[in-house]
Image (tube, rainbow, N blue to C red; front, side, top):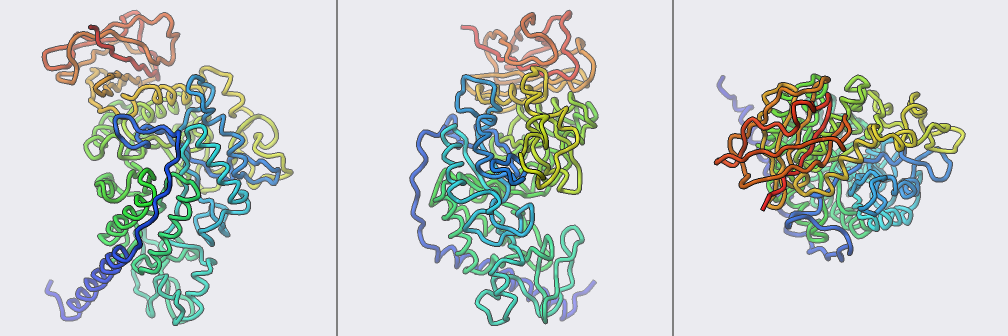
Length: 569
C-alpha cells in the first residue's frame, strides 16, 4: 500500500516527538548536578567473589498493611515488621529457627488514597497508617543490624490524581505543572497495551493514564520532572534504603502509541542509573518488566537496571511442578540461563498481582515444596512473597492475595488485637500459620527455612554456574551448581512416587580428579541412614550412569536431594 502525504506527515511528526523525548533526556542528564555520595553502611555482608551484594541475597516481599499490626489499629505497620525481624532473620548465622532472608522489598510506603499505595500523593513522607518516618528509619537500622538490606517500591511512572502536582496541572493549561503530565487537546484515540482505555477527558483536554483513570502518567520527557525524581531518589537513599523496586519499569516514556520498552524508556533508565549510583554505588534497582525474557534482558546490559523479575521462569516453574514435568522445568531453566547471567535476574514464584502458589498447585503441599526447591537451588536472586512459606492461599481480586499474614491460630491469625482488621485473614488460618508450622520439621515453613539457610551457607547455590544433567527419568530434574571452590549436585523428583531407575549422565563438564559425596539436604526420608556414592569422572569432566543412592534406597517422591562433591586429594 502506498503512503499518502498525510501518512508521511504523521510519520514525520511521530519521529520528531521521539527526537524531542530523547533530547529532553540528554538535556536532563547533562544538566543534572553531580550528586553527593553518602557513606556506605558499615558491617553489612558484601558479595562473594567480587559480585554485588544482591547476588548473595534472598529477598522477602512485604505488603506492610498486612504483615503485622503493632498498635492495635487493624493495620500493619513499620513497627510491626520490626517486631517480626527475628522471624525473618535473627542475625545469628548459627541458628536455623529464622527464615534466613537477607533482603526486604516493601511494597509502597508513601501516602496514598488507595489501600495498595500504588497511587502516590507525597513522595517525601510515609503513609501515616504505617507509622512515622522515624519509625521507618528505625526499621532500616534494626534490619541492617541483622544483615538485612531494605528496598522500597518506587512508583514514578504515574502519581495519584489527588497528588498536588496533578491538581495544579489540571487546574490551568498555563500552570507550570501542566507539562508534568501528558495532555492532548484532542483524543489521540489509541488504546493501551492490553486494550485498556488510556486517554481520559478532563475539561477541554485529555490526559494519559496507562493503568487507571486515577493514576495519571508523569511526563518523564520533561527535565523538570526528571530533576524532581532525582530529588526523591536522593531523599530515600539518604534515609537509608538500599535500593528500589521499580514499578512498571517498561512504561516510562511512550513514543506515540508505542507504550512499552521504547528507546526513550531505555535512555531514561540509563540516566537514572548514573544518578543513583553517584549517590550510592551499592544501591540496587529491581525492575518490574512484565515482558518476554529477551525484552527483560535488554534492561540488564550493565548500564540500566541491576535486576529484573523473570516472569517467564516463574510461570514455567509452577507449570512444571503442577504437571510433574522435569522436562518443562529443565527447559525453562535452560532458556533462562541462555538469556540471563545467574545473578542478574530476580527469580520468584508469585507476587502481589498473581494467584498464590498454594492456590495454583491445588493445595498440594508437596507441589509447593517442589516449587520452592527449584526456586532456591537454581540461578537467580530469589524473591519470596510473604506467606508463601506457610502456604497461604489467594486468587483475584487483588485484595484476596494481599490478606493479613497468618501468625497463629489466635483471633485474626495473630495479625492484630484490633476489634476489626483492615481485611479479614483467610478462613484457614487456624490450620495454616507460622506458630503451627514452626514446630513441625516436615512443614512447608521448615522446608523454606532449610533451603534458604542451605543457600546462605553454600556459594555454589547462590552464584554458581549451572550445567544440566541427564537423568534418564522423566520425573527427575538434575543439575550441577559450581564455582572454583565448590560443586553441588541437585536432584529434584517432581513425581509422586519413589524412583530407583535413573542414571545421571554428564557427557562433559567442569569436574576433574576424584570426589566424595557429602549430603547437604534430603527431604522425604531420614537422612541419617543414607549411603551416598560418588561419581567417577570421565575424560571430559563429566560422569556416566551415576546414581548417588544405592538401589535399595530410592529417591522419595516429591523429594529434593542436594549433594556436595568434595575433591579427594
